Picture 1 (tube, chains in turn red, purple):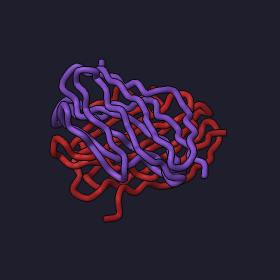
Picture 2: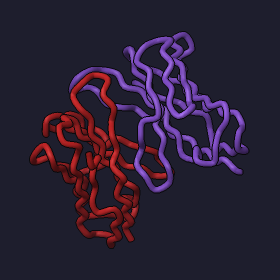
Picture 3: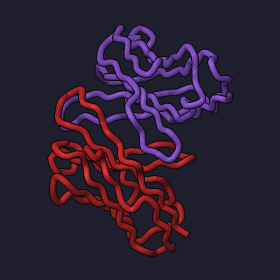
Length: 114
Length: 114
């Protein structure tokens, strides 16, 4: 099993540019989560999907952020336009349907907005 | 709402020392409790979990007992190693199905010196 796959692993961009982060969950998992991690705010849940449907997006910081899950094996998190305060590590995680199932995290995308 | 409180860090120990990391929680329902570990440059991975009161989760020499009366889930290890240096997150999950998500504490950095 390849685990949760995220790309790119590192992204450096300039303020105002569009950024797209990608995630491939573990095959067969029904839930997909996007998190952001910073020193100041710790680990924050941005949005999560169940069977490709967004369930809770209350953690999405503002309209500049959007997430999609067009099919069970792919999700994107987009920031447009990006700002320096968006610099963080973004994690994707997935889990199976069962009540006590474990969330598995990807290696993260380290984003730096200049 | 649901929340997890971890002791302030960082923590620095000598190899073979005893480790305790405190975690308390507030939950609206009956939570499952988790400890996740994040090694440098990696995503989070599940260390151990407990799903009901008085359960003890254990893995890699780490243990934590679900204490409902004190709403706590403290992490312990009898003899730490340099390889245990990482960030440790306490987390809880309430709800079922599409309402299930993890609430994380702020994390604590553990450094073990030879």
